[in-house]
Length: 581
Image (cartoon, rainbow, N blue to C red; front, side):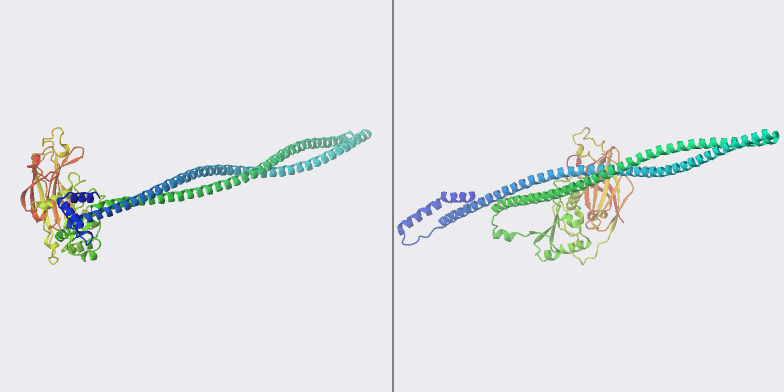
């Protein structure tokens, strides 16, 4: 709207508009409304701009009304979200309390179960004691009956012995009387002695019977006392058994209450989970509405910036960008369309994808770019080997000594870094037979002018080359395998030349490399400073296409992390021996 007002103001302040306006008013006065007056170009343009301003004003009013409605909906959604959040909090608190109650009920149930188990064991012990007491009582009753029988038998034997003793005494007295009467002392004395002996035996039997009776009386008293004790034990056992039955009933009721509390806690937890799901859904709805509103604002802002492209400019446009979908759909498009693909998705494909990509890029363009969430670059040699023409690299988040950026610089350095390099012939014409593999032997002899790493800039002795302990790493990027990307990279490394960056000498054994695709393969030379604590710092590097390598003793110019040879890197180089077998 401001732009339209500015244009109207420019038209109204122009002399041509004022002149045509005056002429138009003069013609209107002269015509007296009898005939229509033709409007000039500036006046028609002015009227068109006024109409455009009116339409823009209406559109702004409509947009403002939609924005207000969207704001109302957003506030309503926010209120709903807050309400759902409060409900969720209440449900969560209730679930938390119910869970605590359930935990306490579970703990009480477990404690009651333990007590029940202990009481059950005690009841079993009491039951065993009761059985033993009953057996003891029965046995003591039997013993008591046996003692009573023995006592009766002893009393009978005692009475018989007493009566026998009385009779024997009477017989002895009669015999004595008869002896006196007959005066036959010897034989009668013998009979008297026998009678006395029998009387003594009878008296001893009588005494033994009396002793047995005393023992029987004592055993009977002990049996009565034991019987009384066993009766008390039996009564206590019956009382404990009744208490145990009552306790077990109480435990069952407690278990039922605990189960009910646990079920209530489960219901509360389920309700809290449902409330949480509803709150999450409301939150997602609110976020979707907010995103839609934000998208609408961005869309309106972008639409305000849209300017109609002239047909002449469109005719001069040679490339049009589009997203790659499938080989069939992309092949149907004209060659001036450039198909964009993410590098991560390219490296996840198989060998069939490589063959299709090589055929497709014979007459179509493909552009690859790093994934939006990836900070590191992918191997560009692998993508060049598939015929991809434009491989984008991430220069924003790279680290010092990024091999893939060094490879990208070395690829285009073969054509003076003009930005374009011709593809290999076998990637353009499929009638050309496959290229033959090569074998190269690389021997690192020495180096010259290796400065300290940039990471040590500003430190003590930073300008000295004698504090550098360089080691050379030679890496081959073949791009031969899409399935096994690590199999396309081969690395060799020299030993460390301690504290010598001016003219380090290695002169070690040759490194042997087998190269399957020499037309796209690249050899990367990187020099690192190795400290005693195992930390390495990047010094310099150089990437050379294998197709540009020459045999013999060669000097390899080294570049810093930003691919320049200025300052202390002006003379940095490696002296190597290269031989192709």
